[in-house]
Amino acid sequence: MKLVSFERDGRAGFGAVIGPAGTEQGVVDLGRALGGRFADLKALLAGDGLDQARAALAGRAPDFALAGLTLLPVIPNPGKIWCCGLNYAEHVRETRREVTDKPMFFMRVADSQVGHGQPIPCPPESTQLDYEGEIAVIIGKPGRRIAPERAWEHIAGYACYNDGTIRDWQRHTQQFGPGKNFWHTGGFGPWMVSADEIAGGATMTLVTRLNGREMQRATTDMMIHDIPSQIAYLSTVAPLAAGDVIVTGTPGGVGSRREPPVWMKPGDVIEIDIDRIGVLRNTVIAEA
Image (cartoon, rainbow, N blue to C red; front, side):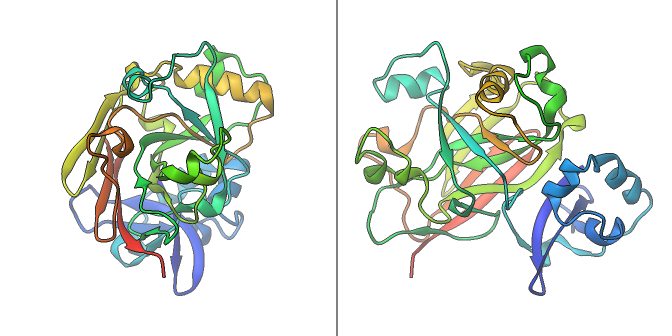
């Protein structure tokens, strides 16, 4: 399934995208189809509702067109957003850092995110808006101290992510949270592909394009700390809950490390393309 969070006629909802890519895809309103039992996509995951959603889709026509919706971040209200830094060797080299035995994590807040097709604002305080294409993991089954070999069981699905960063604010101090949390700078979408469609350990290819130009390319087998080890590490820190998001790291090729640097600017289109998921696309605007 491809599950989305959306806004339509001033109302937030969630649903399933049906129809093959490249066609006029539609959306089944799962809030309605499931009789209002779940308030949003996070609640569906927390209520172990994926099987109910699959059953509700059987033989059902779409309620409305995907093209007419305002898409929200896949999980608009995650309890935790953990982001893994320096998780591809090429990115470690370009930042002139060293590979660490343990993964390095920082956190984003929910309102630093924006959905597919929505604008990413470039704030007036900086011209150093950078892209970071990544694969997001959405937790379905909660757990604490999850063993790596059981980690795949806890994943509800996957999405594309752009860990948009205001680089000069990131570098104000060693604690670079401010640069990672400017309002609406992180793209999250277009949907969550449920884990039953992507086998645990399957290789995924990630490509980032800026105005059609390829800037990043990597496969998941190039990660230094793989997805199960990230889940095991984070679930030791604190219990992982349904709807929590793990952003698994960006490969080399970020704009700040190019010569000369490449910063996103108003009018630019940034795309994160993951072969088994889809394409997350956002246009950059000047923040009003």
